[in-house]
Length: 469
Image 1 (cartoon, one colour):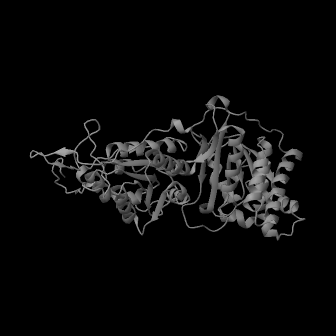
Image 2 (tube, helix red, strand yellow; image 1 turned 30 degrees about the horizontal axis):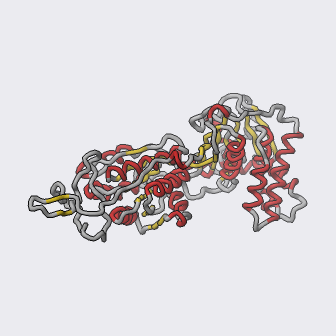
Image 3 (cartoon, rainbow, N blue to C red; image 1 turned 60 degrees about the horizontal axis):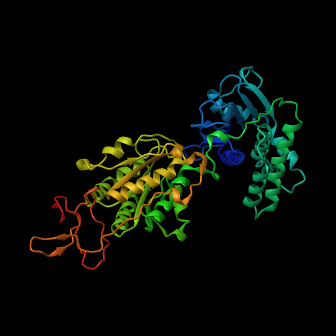
């Protein structure tokens, strides 16, 4: 199903609610939010179309799909921008109220596609969504413009009826979201119920669909719906707890990675410190300093930021300090397309440093897998004292799927042994601390916290001597 409309039509919220109800019903699902990369385009134009696609089934699915069976088009621009992706026979629910001459002319329709036969290959359901919503909210003390805003909830109610989705969760969500504006909450709930009742009573929808829970696709456990960036944030917190190290994030805001900074800043109770630096270089510099000081250090960015951080990543390789570099990839090159996805930074992650400084690369495969990928990246960084790249992308970051909440005993033990005393005896018999003496199993160097008495040491120096540094 693809919900499409103007940037202000609430398509992301509509899709998000349908997703949550689908997850709680027990279907497997995969989502693809898609919003413009540009500064908000004029209403009703093609560049301003925002959409949310959801693929759900009674079995294991791996992608959000590329050919929607149902398109909900809120205006002519949404229809024109998305019609090319629909297979023949797909269902189109159209908000006929928006198909005015002016709105159609904006996107290049000379005649109405609803009347000229161009949509004969599809099952078209013309629904006056705006009129029906305003009519349903007549008893509320709202202006017409305020009432029209609830048309996305009317559409959600209609789709919830078509696919037998539970409704209690959405109503509870609307009550809590608009708790400070109970009249707006009540209006949205009324529009949502009106959409459901419209589906129940109209003759236009002869068919409704029942998609059973995906029992076979899920091992037993407690599940929640989760996006990639949220799973990655939780993975980083879990890694810091398993390693018994404070988590430090040095970051500069950049789409689509900023959500991780927003999320981690909420978890000071887990010993998380977040630092919004003045630029990308300061962000990773602060993180590398935190690694030197004994923290699990992370910096988050996207492709353009990786380019700026490359010198400090080379420094981290030379110093041999654990550091997680999280790259949520987006379209490029240059400063790129912030909201569009592309897996375009692999070669930069592998080879984008002077001196051919080698760095391990870990990449998640699904939104929920971002949790495990974060734990694995932390394990490698801590065990081998090296920076590690974690390569996600906008598609995974903003997409969502059901995630089984792991039991604590399933999480890996990431405990770190810091150097506590001298580790080398010189030819003269003196006990000294060598910062680059290798562990025979991992070849990792010891990690000594600055300020530990007797372990004063120097790290770095490009031509550092083996053992002594």
